[in-house]
Image (cartoon, rainbow, N blue to C red; front, side, top):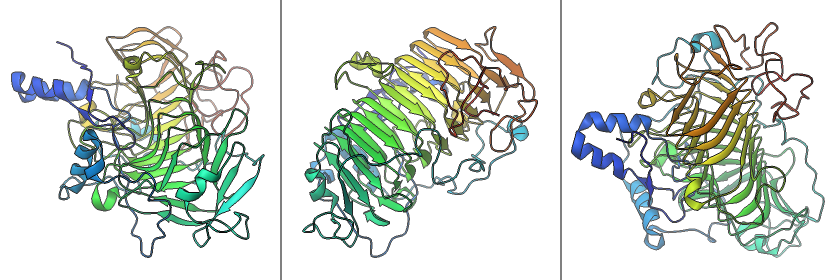
Length: 514
């Protein structure tokens, strides 16, 4: 019997909110085989990157400025069938499950090897990962075209200058042209019920001249939303979204919104955003293409969607926006910090740090590059490829994930019903022995120069290393004498590490150069 059954998704728009999958196979197994079969399937099932939405903890707001909520807002009555299901879930009385803490403590690396599978995440954001998200590819950016401004106390009748800023996203986004930048001044925007707070629909830039919506440099811009998504990019192209603090209402109403969702859009870059406290997926791509997810921080997501979700997910990618892999790859997921994302309801199968999900179903022909990501204390796997192909995962650091006890036989590096996947130069410190890597019904999966702390795993190859002590500091950077130093190969490795430091000679294993 197939232990890793493919999931069935109900939603037509599985974003941060819609990707609702029914575990039909699990249900059948339950009827035929009983509780033990359900447990086995829940442990091995890998799907859901998109419809899994976690609405991260909600902030208590008073006098909140609700901007841009009219465009794209959906009520349960007008939602698509799958969305109605999600909406109905959001309206149910509070569940008894306790949400993961918004503040977590990071275990010493030495203690991680002794932690018990399924224990509650206990990790702290590493000292080298400041909240401002300056990692690798996301710190240096300067607008190159016309710049307009938006502020909570602005006026849409103004000229959009810094001294006379606009006010509502819904009305001003349609005014932007290729190459334009909309800078948002400090403040709190959106709402925690109807969402999306920013609906970027039908906005089109051009190659070399994207439309950019960004937090003004050095300013704290909070975007709050509920409903299906907090920020939605749909039917658009050549759009950049930068520098926002994106949160949902999951802590108060356990809604299942996605944080940032790219749906049916192409050539979209999501850079240096912080996404947290949403009950659905953190950053989600649905039937999208040519998307870059760079230098974001994602935590406390994926909690409340009973159909499961993950922190960063690419679901049913589509062959849109011109030829695939025009610059080597179609999707880039790099330089992100992802922690404390976990499923808490339903048949627990996800809560992954990064998932490339069901792309074969759309006959998708592009490739995905996953590099320089730090993933720790997540309920699911570190990097998971599920019913998808053509993925290179290189120089990632995966520490103490698989905290959900339902993930008992899974691996930090995971390929299930996948082909043409390469895991290279990854530093893996699993929460238990043997959880370094896992395959099921997969082919053409290769491993090279990965380093695992603990016992050998099921897919160890000649160039992989297994060590008793990885000698990694509390900031996840290799210490002097670490076996990770110079243990990688330059083949496919990023030229800089997660902090933007140049790699020279043989690269170190993991996201950081020592």
